Length: 242
Picture 1: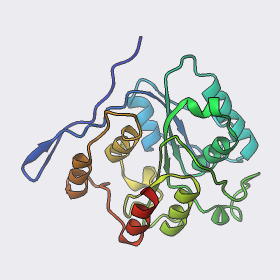
Picture 2 (picture 1 turned 90 degrees about the vertical axis):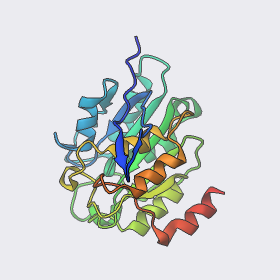
Picture 3 (picture 1 turned 30 degrees about the vertical axis):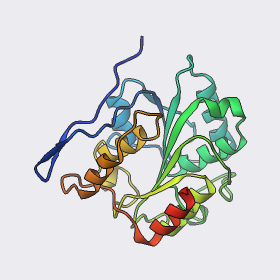
Picture 4 (picture 1 turned 180 degrees about the horizontal axis):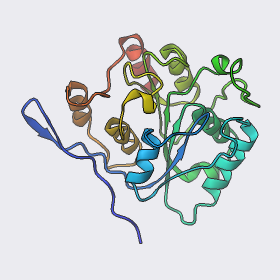
């Protein structure tokens, strides 16, 4: 039996009521980063909110080994018991682990994915001196038919916005600047991150959130984690997507 899809609640904007079409129809696999995601992290809240959302256990959260993490991601996707498409929601170092998996994955494995939301991938050069990372060298580069969105924050202590933008190009992904919200984690005060749910839903095949919905998100003053266009990268993004 397939569980009923979940839709984000309505929001009143400038006297208008807009139903943000953030219906997530597929299974979600979350991939946390270094030291795992705590109970108030948006990944944990999504796992409690959505009946078909579960975490990939990467094993040694405090001593990441790239090969081990990639193998566990591979097993989790291969072990899915049905042919339902999968949405990936990765955070921080989990984004790099997913990227390494995707770069090495075959066509059949990639075909299981409906999309990937890659949030706050760090600049690995900032982590190597402070944490015992094994195997996480330079980020891979690939082209993809799987829709992906990379999300940055203006004041992420682990990566400059320009670095995350460059990663989005390496990963053939759409780039979104979420504004000044730190590392986009529990400390950022995002709650269950409604806009992140919207971004995840937008990766699915039609019906997807309309562009008009996104303009309302941008105008909204109600959401503390609203999206903000970044003029530093807007012209590059438009050229990349033509």
